[in-house]
Amino acid sequence: MTSASRTLEIRTSPHFVSGHDVGVIMFNVVLALLPTVAFAIWAFGLAALFTLSAAVASCLATEWVACRATGREATLGDNSVLITGILYGLTLPPSCPVWIVALGGVVAVGLGKSMFGGLGLNPFNPALVGRAFLQAAFPVAMTTFSAPFGADRFGSLPAATLALPFSRPTLDATSGATPLARWKFGGELTEANELALGLVGGSTGETCAILIALGGLYLIVRNMMSWRIPVAMLGTVALASAALHALAPETHAPARFMLFSGGLMLGATFMATDMVASPVTHLGCWIYGALIGVIVVIIRAWGAMPEGVMYAILLGNAASPLIDRAIQPRVFGGAGGGSGP
Image 1 (tube, one colour):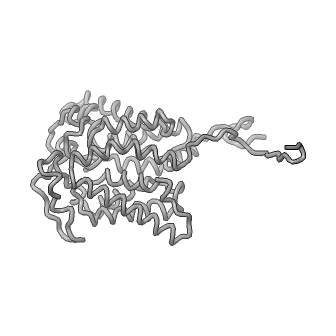
Image 2 (image 1 turned 135 degrees about the vertical axis):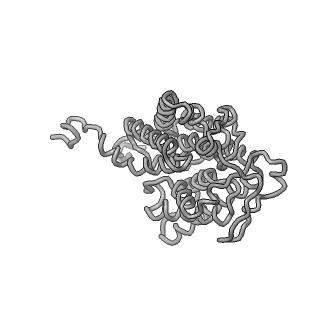
Image 3 (image 1 turned 180 degrees about the vertical axis):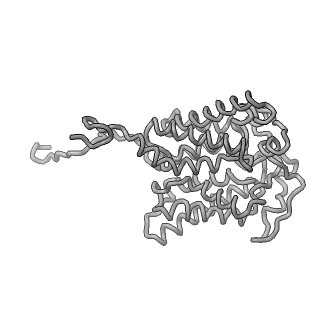
């Protein structure tokens, strides 16, 4: 090649490009979630399989329709909406009626994502938007949980799973309260090892906390998730819970129970870390995670509901842009937060 035929390309930084595009990152998040999904199906059987399948299918279908209706390029191939469907399904009770699951999936993607412009523009975690809608619209269905490891869990479905739309579902005899509900309303404390191993009832994703943590560790090692957010969130819950328990052990649960119960581990690992709805600076991530942790403890300790992870993360999402704005780093050569001389 002669010098006259060469083309000089002038580009701005960054000049080194990694292979971690959206599709690659989302694919790895799916891989990190697979052990939790597999354990949920093993623990709850066909009920969890139907719930997760309906959640994923409704989210995928809504994304396709929304892209076609708005003329945007289809984003099914980047796995982002697949993750939304999986996470949304993991927040639901395994015996939730399929039609309610599908309705929430439409709200999660249609309202929580597409109405804000699609991928990368949603201010709130879409999976939690769908879950919050169902919590307000169908509180009974959202607070009815099946016991895990039923003898016939792979041979039959809970009566409510295939209930007709807007009918009153029949509750199974195996339905029961979650560990958080038993503590809040009955003072019954579940052992931490049972919570960590997923031997208790709850939402589909309130299973093996160890597998959830290992999935998060995998993403951290691959540099595909901010470790500061879950560390700040879990650390704040642990410290605040330990302090409250030391002051009033008969009223406030110990830190080990608070860490492994409910959806805290799933929320801290896979939901609060949503790259779109969380801060972009390191300090912002610490503040964001700590804020969510404080709200979780406040709701669990003094709120009317036993669980508060969902609302805490959504409030954290709302505060995320304010946190970024408040701690903007000073431009090099400038004074304060200005643009410099």
